[in-house]
Length: 339
Image 1 (tube, rainbow, N blue to C red):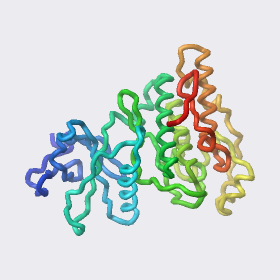
Image 2 (cartoon, helix red, strand yellow):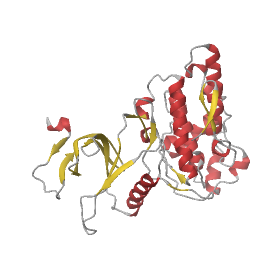
Image 3 (tube, rainbow, N blue to C red):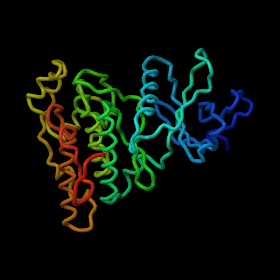
Image 4 (cartoon, rainbow, N blue to C red):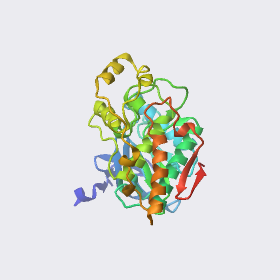
């Protein structure tokens, strides 16, 4: 029965004063005594997350144990970025850092980092398969863009937006989390090419070009399209196939785009079949849009297609959503400014 619960309180394992040890799967959590009733709720390359009850704040929280934060320089950078950005960014659509601690008391022993965050009810992976009405869908998208707009205004690019990094409450409140790959923005320059989970990578990331804030807008467009179609928009099997999936739907970019590519990349791209763009009313037919009348379906669909056309822009030099006045539709009858 212990295998079913996945965690055991390790009463025999020593812990510093004020802490206790709990085994979560294959990892041991050494936790402040104020946090009780741990249960695993998620895991990934950057750590394991548990829900817990905070007896001091009298509320449920999420505790993330960073995976091997000091194993190498890359892990250390990611741990540092996540901690610092969660600490300094304050916005209603960005997950809040409530506490951070380490059970080690000396620099020589320092090896574990725990981040305590707000606990949400689900992530977008679970929401995508639900039958959302237009009001809820619009509100979720609006909050995603508000959160990213705030990060961009602070000079921060998230770089890893995907459904599992966006969490929601039952009241439809949405927050963005996981800043291990985030970094400061600047001019268009070469940065780490393998950022963003493959399905949500922008063309400039796929092709190893310099990139800016556009990469986050592209990712949100992919997520929005996935919610509408109830399936991944660009399901590439690998790095190369990802580019093929993008061009099959959005068309092969022109020569003015290709000349800016690295010669080796350009030569490869030019060997690929040329595709004409698929009309957005075929990509996202009216059936994708919930409404209570034919008139509302048409209005919802036209507004959403226009928005998607400004998010899913292959050529990063072209005007995209993040270059235009920051207005998006939040209902079937109006627009509002991002906050």
